[in-house]
Every structure is written in C-alpha cells, then in structure tokens.
Image (cartoon, rainbow, N blue to C red; front, side, top):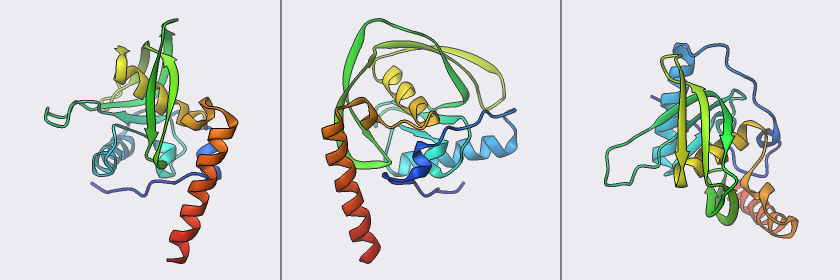
Length: 172
C-alpha cells in the first residue's frame, strides 16, 4: 500500500467534479486501500479521491472509535437516496483544510447506495457521525468543501490563513 499526498486548500483541483467509476476493478480497490492507509495515517475519519488528486467518485470512511477495531467503508459512485429533514450540527474538519474546523448543519440521517470493493451494489442507512462523514466526503466529489457551507466571511478567513500557511511552507 502507498500513502498518498493530500491536496491542501486553496487548490483549484479541489473544486473539480469527479467522474463516475465504470466498475470497481483492481486499480480502484488499490486506490481504496491506499486512501484508507493515507486517511488513518493523517489521521482522519474520511477521505475522497479528489483530495489525493484522483478525479473519480471514490470515498472511504471509518468513524470507529480509536480503541475499537477499524470499520472502514469503501464506496465507489456513492449516491444519496434519502436524507432526513432533521438536521444536526457537527464541528467538521477536513484533511485538505488542516487545523481548521467549523459548525456545519447537515441532515442527521441518510441512505446511500454505492459499489463496494467487490463491485457489489450496497445500500447503507447512516446516522450521526457516519452520516455527516459520508455527506462531507460526497461533497468533495462535487468539488465542494465544508467551508462552502459556512458564511463567506468565515470561509475567506480560513482560506486566507491556509494560503499563508502554504506559502510559508513553500519557502521553508
């Protein structure tokens, strides 16, 4: 397995829409495994392929407690079939926006259809942190970041700080 470089915002590649996967083959399974390794090492609870420079509709999530065994979901072409009207607010972060967090309202429950690592169609009803994480990662497939769900003032502050951070690291 390979640890992949994570793209840090602001970067125009994070605003691109990912294309569907034709089928989950060996290449996609390897991508999923590499994404999981990258996510765990970061550490994070979710990662979308566009965050590692692959414009394909693939996400991985694992919201298991650190003391529990891993419970990863590998999803190709995830699509929301249903979301609850009830919202919950979660303090979200992102591996592409390191060290920045914001309260984001999202549906508290959702049902998602996807292709798993065996190319089988699956459906999952998720709630709480898992539902939030799936929706957050699916946003990446549409070229959206969690900061797109907050005020333009807060978004601007975060993105300017990230730009400064990137510049300082480039010259270090």
